[in-house]
Structures are given as structure tokens and as C-alpha cells.
Image 1: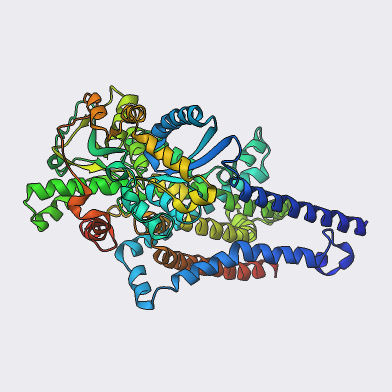
Image 2: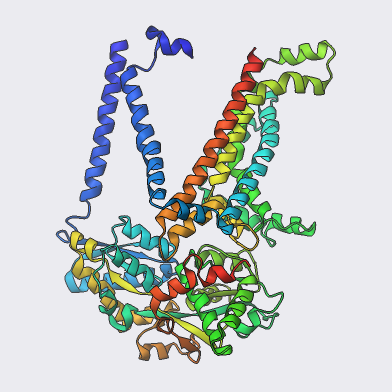
Length: 346
Length: 282
């Protein structure tokens, strides 16, 4: 009896080991012959609010790819906070392409040696096939009379916006407010700090990411105004047309979500060409229209104008270059002990 | 227990060597090595850097928030955990099995799902939040919300620790006490409570440790506002990892402090428990 038990347990152990190693082997080998067979798989690691966009775009691209090459393509999507997505790629998430919320997150992958320098010039328009901007989403009727950044610092206005220290997308929100203050106070830094300090003092819930903030405002009914990406705001408006209004401030920022091929992974997976085509195809007219339909601003001017009803094209947009690029902006505003820490929670 | 370990003939699972080997390698691979790497990462900082980081006001505040809320939640769980365990052990009623199973739901449910659901229920237009708002209590996006999330995730620890002890406690002990003229409160204090004290401490300690480190369920309901002091330590760690400049050392340093706090707490609780169980068995 005793002997038999021992035998059984040994068999189980061996079987377990076998199962595990088979899992490991297939897990590693799964991607290697991606382009040999009739099916190609690539992974697109993206940030939170692009779910709907890439769902639509992947379908379009798959059709195009099939017509062109006769091969099926499967695009594995991954969404999450832009910063944590970048980190996951550095830590081994096998992304062939990344489509993140800001260039800074792609730069951190570049710094890890996985993306070749100069990626930002690889595709048109700073490798941003679509852009967006920062707007306000208010409840129908706009009872608090919110028309511009000025109105956000009034007493009693409750703001929802994500934490720029944990969400890359939320950095754009902060910088847009900062740019407004810069114009208003002619660059007087004390007054500008005072302005954004008042603004962030009115923030009642600071979610860790953009989608979380939208949920807090829309589903949980918190706050009077959501400072949001235009695409998020338009999406909320599409779902609840009778409950919200969009207010476009006089000054905002051109949010440029960047795309790049993760060279190291793409080379290993033999997917460099298809990855490149995947990102290039974003600039074609069909794709640009899908982009517009999903409430991102197409980078193609002609097609952007087709969507003139959707977007307020009169808004005055500053760019990240006005802040000296992302690395500098990050050091100046969001690093530990920088301006955001200084003004918040005082 | 002792018999099973020493009397070779009675061991059911064979092979001390193999089982011990599995135990040690599991512990190393899953617990010791990752924890050691947390230490290694945080030791990359110099001591002054480390001290400066962990004494920053927002980080100290986050520790206070986490520990305070986890402590309150563990106390609440201890009170209600005893009552729930009592009901489940001492009474027979319709649906008892179902309720017994439900106790473990917080273990099974992804904590983020719990967090989102609790937030929706307790925000001021949610169905429970509305009721609380009427009496002037805001739950979601305050420390109360954090405590509720921690109560939710911690309750099974207490119930499951106490249940088996209560099951073994013969009713005749209580009856004897009552027969000898003790009041009901004396029976509870002198007979029942000393018996459930050690497992209660275990449950309390586990619920506390779990609450201090909790991320998923807390993050949605807390609002993460530094201003309102609702940032918890685990959020600060994620902030370090999610921000544009990923700060592994900083995250690891905070995690190390968290680890030490949890360890000390569990250690103290184990000591108290040890003393308490000696007294009851003596």
C-alpha cells in the first residue's frame, strides 16, 4: 500500500513536470513561426481610451491585409494606463507595436534599448496619426456656468480629473491648464502656480487613470466637470446625449498620442514589415475616417475638416514643444518635488 | 499533529524528502526570492535618500491612512466575524450552507470588481450611498469608503479562523457554567472568549495585514486624493511604477517599509496569541 502510494505520487509529480514544461515550451515557441503560416499575429500595446478605435481599425486593417497578402492577421490588443503599459513592454510584454498616450512613455521604452532612436520621425506628424485635445465635460444645463479654465477655480466647483503622477494622459490636462494660466498672467510663475493650485484644490476625486475618472464622473455622478480628452468626452456624449455637454476652453493643448514599432520584439518575432504596415496604414484615408468616427482628430487636414461638426476647430492649441518637450516637461512638472507636488495638497 | 510527524508508520502522504523539498522550493520561488529582490532594489538607494523618501509628508500620510483604516476594518471584522461564526456554528437554519459559502466570496471575487461595485453602491447616487447621504455621511471617496472595502476583503479571515474552534467547543462547557450560576455575560467572557481569543487574533492579524497592503478594491472607492488624505500606501507604490519616470527603487523602498510593518504586526500578534493559548490550555 505504502509503496503504491509512493509510486502514484511520483507519477503525478512527473506528469505535472511534463505538463509544465510543455506549457513553457509552447508558450515560448508560439510566436516564432508567425509569418510562415497563413496567419500572422501581432500585439498592439495601447493605452486606455483607444479600445473602441482599435477595435474598428483592426477590422479594417485585417481586411486590407488579407486583400494584399492573402494572409489572415490577428491583432492582439492590450489596454491600460499608458505608463504601466510602457513598463509592461520593458518588462517583457511581447508588443510588436506600441500606441501610447504620450511620447514620453515611448521614450522610456527607447531608453530600455528596445526601440531604436529616431522613432518619432519614422511616421508623419511626430508619429502621431491622430491627435486630441483637452476639453470639459459638464452636466446638461451647465448649472455652474463653466465656459473656460477661469471658471474651474471658482469656489464650489467640483472637478474630476485623473492623477498626473500616475496617468500619462492626465499630464496633458495639467499642461493645458498651465498654458491657459501662462497666457492669462503673462508668464508670472507665482500667479500661474496659484491658479493651478486653486484648480487642483477643486478636484474632489483623483482617479489613477483616464477611464477611471470618466467612470467616476459619468457612472457614479461625482463632480460638476470632468477635465477629459476630447475623444473620451465625445464618447460619453454619444452614450448619454441628454445628460452631458462639452465645453471647449479658449486655450487647450494638442495631445499627440504616439505610435512606434518595438524594434527588438518585432525583429525577434519576424514582424517588422507587418508592424510597419500596421502603423502606416493608420494614415490612409479610410483609417483616418475611422479615427474621426472614433472621436480622435485625424492628422490628415482634409479629413479633419470632414469632421468639422464634431470637433471645435477654433480652439487655440499649444503643443508639448512649448514646454520644451516631454523630458523637460516631466522634470519641471511631474517629477517628485516638482511643480505638481508643490501646488497640490498644500 | 505531533504523532503524524514522528510516527513514521502513520504518515499518509509519503516521502518526507519530497514534500519538504516541494515546500522549500515553493517558499523560495514564490515568497523568499521575490521578497529578497524587493530588499535588493531598495538597497540601491543610499540611506539618506531612503530616509528622505519614506519620511515625505505624502508618504507618511499614506502609511497612516493605510494602517488606520486597516486597523479599524480589522476591529470591525473581529466583532462581526465572531457573530457570523457563532451564528454559522450554533444555529441551524434554512440557507445556512449558502451563507457559509458566501463568506468566501471576497476571496474568490477579483478585488477590482469588488472595488468598482462598492464604489457604485456607496457613491452619493448609488443605492446605499444615497441612504448614507441622507444622514449626512459620505462613504465613497472618503476614509469610510476605504474601511468598507477593507472590511469586505478581510471578513473571511476572521470567520474562517474562529469557526473550527467554536465547533470544537462543547456546548456542555457553557451549560456547566450556567448551571453553576454564572450569568450569560460571565459565560461568554470566562468560557467562550478565552477559547476563541487565539484564533480571533490570527484572523485579526491576517485581516489587518491584508488591509494594509490592499490595492484593487480600495483604489476605486478611495478617490486617491492627497488633499483628503485618502491615498493608501499601495497606491503610492503604483504611482511610482506608473508615472513617466518609473521609479523601481522608490517603489521597493516603500514596499520594504510596508513589509516590515506587516511583519512586526504579525509577529506581535503571534506572540500575544502564543501567550494567550498557553494560558487557556494550562
